[in-house]
Image 1 (cartoon, rainbow, N blue to C red):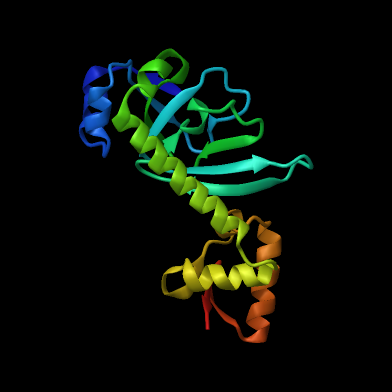
Image 2: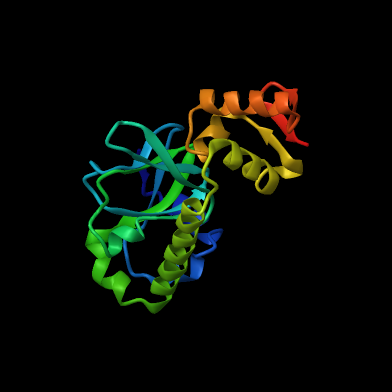
Length: 206
């Protein structure tokens, strides 16, 4: 992680942020955080609690189960909040956030400014909206079809443009399975006539 305190660069990102008005109303120390692809943005062993707003790039959010396997929770792009839960609850012991590409965030310390944050109604409205959206995403995950084949078909039907799946690794991450498991399901579905292979890692639902 790289922290950037350059006022011009910070002003540039605040100026184009969706939350510009609220950020400018908060009397707190803001700065930029930058991450390389694959770098952890947030983890249980992070010493400093940061509130971060994704301004450029994207993230993958997952948990590590007791058996060491990784389970995808969500993804996030521009305007996504990190640290909203940490304002109210102790930090989770198994949630990880990883930069899916080069990442830039507007950031500030939660502990240092907690009293100011909790007294700003506009900021709290944003947090409520953010947490409500995340709860909705988690509910949708819990309601997902049971078998992997059902999940793959539903994903292709409802989530893929033109019902076309592109990229085995990234899709496997979203579907909480291994790339090998996903490839086996796609091969079986192709043999059964449910999908058609268009190219390497690309399949269309028929």
